[in-house]
Structure formats: C-alpha cells, structure tokens
Image (cartoon, rainbow, N blue to C red; front, top):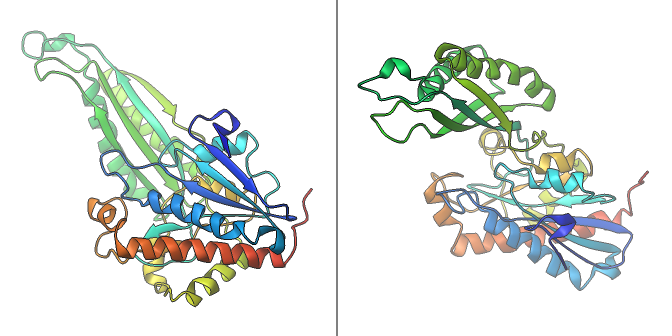
Length: 328
C-alpha cells in the first residue's frame, strides 16, 4: 500500500494482481461536520476494501489488476478531482463504489455542483452609540439570501442553490465587520452550471452593493461533474445485486434518491464508472439526517456492506471476462 498517495496526506493506493483488466475501487471515507456518518461513508470505504479482499484470491486467475483508492474530502473538498489531476485512475477499465441510501438504486444521476466560500468585509462600530459609522457584513448576507430566494422562481427544476452562513459577527452590540458562509450551486450538467453561476454571483454582488461591503468568492474545489454511468457494468451490478436478494426501488423513488452530487462524477468523465446506491432500510430517515447515521451501524448496515462488497467483486469479474478496454 502507498500512503500519502500522490502527495495527498489523507489518500492512499493499494494494488495487487497482474491481470490485463484494471479495476479501480474507491474507498471514500470522510464524514459530515456535526452529523458524522449521516451519508454512510464508513460503509462506502468498508465495501470497497471488502470487494478488494474478495478479489485478492482470484485476481490473477480472473485476469484482474485490483487498485484500491483511498479518496478523501468528497464532502466539499473534491478529493477525487485533485487525485485525477495528479494522475490517479489513469488506464482503469472500470471504477466503482457503492453508496448507502434508504433503498437500493442502481443508477446514479448526480447533479454537477460548485462549492464556494463567500465572505463580506465591512467596518465595525458600536451598534447603539455610533451605528452610522458601521458597514454591516451580516446585512450583506441578508440581502444576498433574499435575492437568491427570489431568483429561485426563475430557475429550472434541475437546479439547486443552497448554503449556510458560518459566521456573522461576534457581539450583538458591535456592527459585524465580517461575515462568512459556504454556498453550493447545483445543475444538471457542468454546462448548465456554467450558465447558472453568474446569476447566483450577482445576488452576492447585490449584498455588497447594498451595504458597501467588499465581497470575496473563493472556490473550495473544482466543480463536480455530472455522472456518466457505464451501462454494461451497471447491468452487471444490477444482476449481481438481485442474485444476492437485493430489490431495487421503483422509478419514482429512485428519481429522488440518486440526485445528490459527488466527485465520482469527475472520475466517470475520464474512465468507465458506476456508483450504485445500496439500501440500509432506513426510511423515513434519509441521507444527511442523524437518524440515517444511526442506521449506518447494526445488522442492516452489515448486510449492505457485505452485499455491496460481493456485488462489486462479481461485477469486476464480469468486466474482466470481456477483456481489457482499448486505451489510447
């Protein structure tokens, strides 16, 4: 195993087998601030490692080279994008991971998304004695959020704009001189995202203009791309999951469950990839809720972990049976 892979302190890479077909398994392992594993990344990482362990004994016989990528910072940091930029996944025939969800959904259709840190800088003053001397950075966020709220009426249903204010002053009797937040803009594709982002930026500029604050917008990472599923591998995974007794959700449920965003989308733009969701029976609890985090341990979670690992491993063997892809 190679720790600190490609110069990233929290990434790793492990490789075994000498087969001509290269299978990349993504062990994704970060968590949500304040919510812990409310997106189930503990199960993602364990399923990837489990699939790799299952393939270890048959890799050479099946014609597989197995590569496990420890991929940090999916929750806003774009870890896989940074790894791609440094040469990870080059030459892979198939990249895979399985993501926990309330129910099983085979096809991922994540939004493209950008992540930005927004900050306003104003001027502090005593809020009672000298309010006219202040330039209120918290007010700038209020104006921006009202503008975004009104903008949503004119946005297509395939887009999302949401965020939080992380800091907006230190004392109630002092005009806030600095306010900070984190904002996400999502769209069906990177092309649609490129058209949408300037409209959202104008809402933040309105906050600066109305209050006299200075605005700074800093991307947290490169944008996450929409996901491009490899249909053949997806069909293999579906068949393997059904053989294990998994049952996939109906289309109307799947249409809600598969619309989050992931930096695995960027991987799918470069190499064939799948990103199925495996159910842990948590409904009505859904991803990014404390109740969902509680379901990511226990009997149902262990069953999902094992089934996910086995289904990924069988899908790797199916892919190897077709031989290596033509690579440039």
